[in-house]
Length: 197
Image (tube, rainbow, N blue to C red; front, side, top):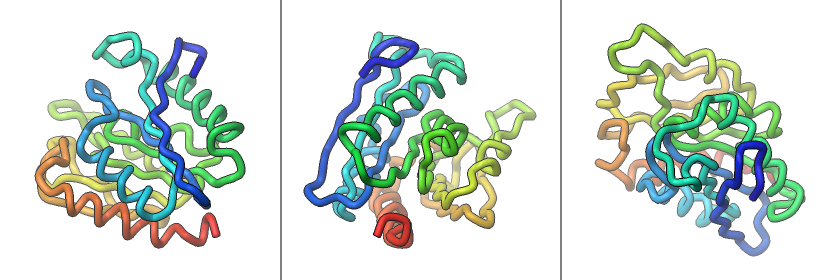
């Protein structure tokens, strides 16, 4: 799919009769094959949601270093708008991703009209830096799930009025307990059914 910053790649898995869609982005240096993303996608399909896994243009171009935030956001918005008009037309969308992809989904939740946001391994505080990205989570006004490893060096985001935080064993990679990641996503999607009935 074309975006203002080059072509993005979308891996689409449509579920017959889906009442909603889940659009997920990858982490800064990784791809859509990350185990937690695959687990979240499987949980969503099992819950009857169509799933779109989005590769940002810099990854499609073969680069590992992420583009600036404004470019990531613009490309993401273009992809979500496209799948909303065509491939996932007529159903509400939950957006999200892992790490950097979660940040993008949070920053753009209003512009993409997301009904919920799913954050896998949200990078709250970069190790060794006195910086917090809590404001990106706080700006999201729709229900949000954060699945975070108990030993994540980026820290543990706090729960909030619209934000559920589930702590699972592991670090930022969320590879240690994939069944727990799957269960957290599955259970949260069940609570989100009101948004797409």
